[in-house]
Image 1 (spheres, protein in one colour):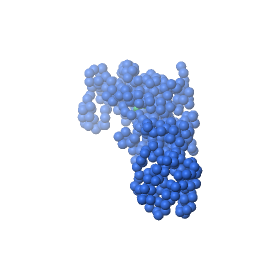
Image 2 (cartoon, rainbow, N blue to C red):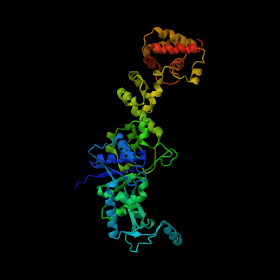
Image 3 (cartoon, rainbow, N blue to C red):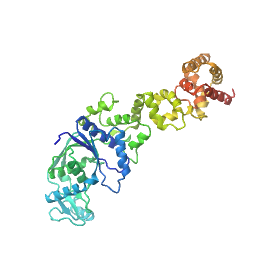
Image 4 (cartoon, rainbow, N blue to C red):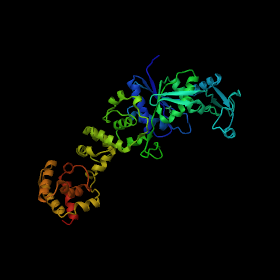
Length: 461
Ligand code: GLU
């Protein structure tokens, strides 16, 4: 039998794919690949009320987007938990036959009443020795042994649980369906999983799961529980409060490489320079170096990473990358001409149209405040008039256009930024935007002059 490690990622398809899930998947992926092991994708689809096939597809697509590709030799699956129902129940039966589990017919109400009367919390093993067999209304409970359970965790070290604090938990519900704890263990066992790397919220389940592993006669996997992601108020990321769907970031123009890089830095540091390609992070990643404290999912920082990755794109990649966000009727060659000049200012690819729209719209909306400010000084109108005259005949390239503006700047004894302000608002409608002379070059003489003259007419000049 092969001894290479088998990692797994076991999402439940009950909603959009969460950025926290993506981070867990990436950690598993890095480990599976760097150890020559396997990454098993198991879809935990046994909660029929909450599952939907489109969520499963969303998981597969999202994983592919962040580079966890189903055709990679290290990838196995997807396997579906629902197809292993027989194995879950067979394991339950074995536990019952070995005396590690017993049936109980107490209702939740009865348990509550008795617990109150006896001054205990939870279920105190009342049916342990009744010798009940299976039957309607009965649950199967695990017989928690005395002692302590030590979970060896690669992130946390040894975590000790006093078995006294763990009640005889349910394995199979009264309707005959196995609970998550059991199905999850049996699947890991069936699939030969050697390493379980998952979110911290599952740590309380782990002593129970480890007991099941041991009762079934198997050595438990190596555990690792990675810290939760929190928002700016240090609250656990939640889909009601925070933007957590990976798909949403993809659709808003974040780059997969930037997202992958940023997610890897949540709880782990790739080194002094946080911006690193996957090829460097994959072999460097170690669970032992993962931080214990909750990791802040900072959308601003993600944006900074994204900006860095956008700046690393070639112009062709940038033009192609922005394409889905550009209105269909925009001239692509015109966009390609301005693209290199906006690369510095983009946080996401989806920002592109808003930065260059004035090149594609006949009458861009004028920002009133910017207009008032740009044309308030006494030199503004005469400068624009001089400029318009000079721009009628000069060469039409950004260097010449700038040189002409510099002459005006000297005439009026002002700085270049001030000299440009009126022209920028006249032509683009706004006080900020891509470099002006490059934008004018792309726009062309006729349209640039039309806008400048139109502004002059409005100003009564
Ligand atoms: N289906 C569980 C979840 O999505 C997986 C737990 C595990 O990784 O063991 O939280």
